[in-house]
Length: 190
Image (cartoon, rainbow, N blue to C red; front, side, top):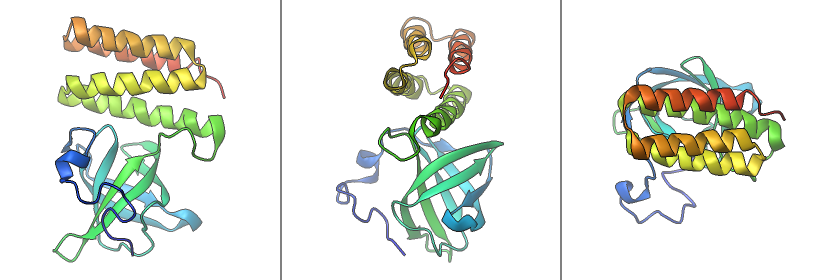
């Protein structure tokens, strides 16, 4: 079994220094993880961020650093990469998953569109907890993803969210900007 941050060039850094996104408590506890080969197991979500989710599992056998997994979480199917697996000291294991958002992963444009769905899911979570800074960072990354996909309307909508966050931090205004992103996503075709 892989240990925490194996093969990661950030091993010596403090956890807060490694983390790109603010963590917040998971709203939904139970998560299903499907490994290659179809092996599925249940986990408990303990925290989440725009970039990933922290889980606790009873059985970590088969979970390895760098492995791609499929996560069923709050009604959504999301793709992730195992970033660490470590005993939590209570006979269980802590597992860190990073949402799969890199363009160079296999699967081409179809998989990237599925990753956009993961981004939307995270946008609504950040709105839910009122993490405006996290939303601004997420909008910037989404704009870059949309640009790489050639999705101009989505790129413009993500820029609109950034602008709304800079000018007007009302919940309704921000939610309207996120809804514009959802509308723009519906026009993205593989």
